[in-house]
Image (cartoon, rainbow, N blue to C red):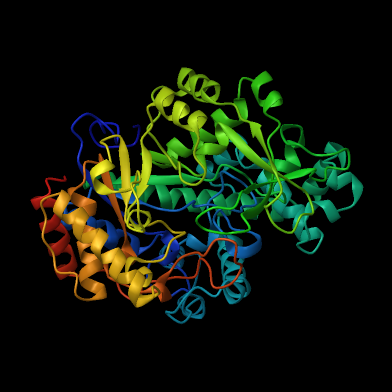
Length: 510
């Protein structure tokens, strides 16, 4: 991929046996209330290099909106302003020493409400000292990639942060005369939002170059859907299934499954795939182009929704009632490949699978995902290590799962014994022996199974690498509390790097 030192082979290249660690930027430690693209991010790259890990996987980097979820953003191609490094702003002369000190926050879980109140005044202060005539910045603005985003955010401020559905009619319906007049009269606000994206991507691309030069590559994540209250929907409503008042008729979700008996009601607007097809999938191709400009490999969340997607009537309180509709299938990826070349994509194929999704995976040849925490609750299944093939990316769990230790702790004694028997059997199938006496030993056995299996890439969430319990869980689907807040107090140390390197050596992952 472009931006890497040398040539990066596809993640599922023949014979590939690589390893990765999953940790979002927000989970990095530091003094500023949330992880940033500062020195801790560079130190984590150094940790991965020392351990011999080839991939760092992150969650979507986007600016979060309601609920603080990286899967709900005000603009699908945005970067999160919270990740901008205050220390870099200080080094650039945009913040004083005292202002930098005032930006500090307790080194605890992310408190998004306090972060919102504290960080944006700091960023506005830094922008007030930034040279708006900077040639590189002016070129960035004139390129137009964040025009709709900056307009949307500037107008949102005018209406007190309310969603665009509550704006005055001329702004709600993006009347260009009214919008352009407002932006011309409020250019400073418009440029502030442009500058946030400029600064974010300057820092992100510098971090990516540093990682690539050390043999560490970045796996990014793009949500299938966008948020309703977003610049995407506001600026291009024709691409979504909305009524004449630009309200949603049906919304995205997932039927009842392993995660939730009532399904998952995401509430995102649904795509008008016929309109996308008529445009040659231009919007999606642009989105993928932007993703590959930032990452070496891209994971597409809820991949199955590109074969068929689940539509829930707007206003429903859960996702029990819904209908399946056809998505674009492989036509989207054929069109994208013609414009962008070979696509190094990981398909998140979890949840309700059927023959259509399996065919789409075969047609694209993208590796799917395997989750070890799904493997040991009984019966023959695709997640057992013996059934994991090469064209797979294997995880102990994802950001939506228990941690491995947390999973063990929450089981009743009888079921835990059953799970342990199945793990012991899986170890035997792979010719491995391991103590399963305590929670940590069981979790460590999963690391051995993770790295020994035949998947082209094995990825461990940092929580499982450090044997953390569910107090470190990132997200619980279908809940709105205590999600996306996990942070490390300290980066993994030399002992962890040495042990991880040992595991990768004995299981021939590099």
